[in-house]
Image (cartoon, rainbow, N blue to C red; front, side, top):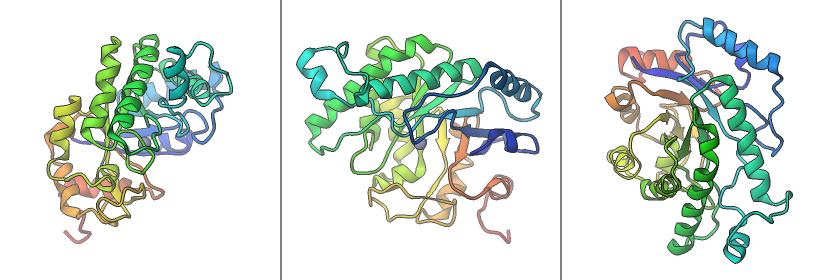
Length: 287
Ligand SMILES: [Zn+2]
């Protein structure tokens, strides 16, 4: 059975009555560089609740990293000096690394196993510059992740003109660079709205991701409100966007997603829709 669920704003309110088999949460303000504010009491309350939950486990609650983390930031400084040691604490990279470390430290204390990361920003479309940015982001992941060996850091494929990781090859470059630093706890999250926005072929994209990156650890099962290849990131409820519905019906049957968290990220509560999709194999209401 598919471990389907959704991204929730307030896990405490949602977790109790929930029939969800997976869940995704932010653990700090996703639109700021501020670190988390969980007390020891908050952490033990979370762990107790999770231990008693009938369907959720530490492997099926996913932490999503803050949106401002940019591991390709301050490329020029590192190119010139060969190090980030002298970097100002106000620099984008220093703030990104502090945020990442705070969130990974909390993910470890919560006992959760998956942390999804938007790898960073690169405004250039030059293949050489993009390759450099991907390798740098991968090295920075590699340098941080050994401190948090119980958490797997998952690079997410992205869409949008300034983002890293549009394609399976680009995500693969990041992961290879992290692994070259000795990282073993890194992996992949694929977002269906992002692969659609980036213009990848929905028929073959997952095979390409597996070829370039290894197995998929988390799936973000979002529809997209934009045309194929528009390179914009606009999520929609599955069946209500531009991705033909039969892809969702095929994806929920795909054995490679059977044992991983499958998360819908949109404003609406899609629990009933996902239950129907999984049990009837269809997004049509009257079947
Ligand atoms: Zn994401």
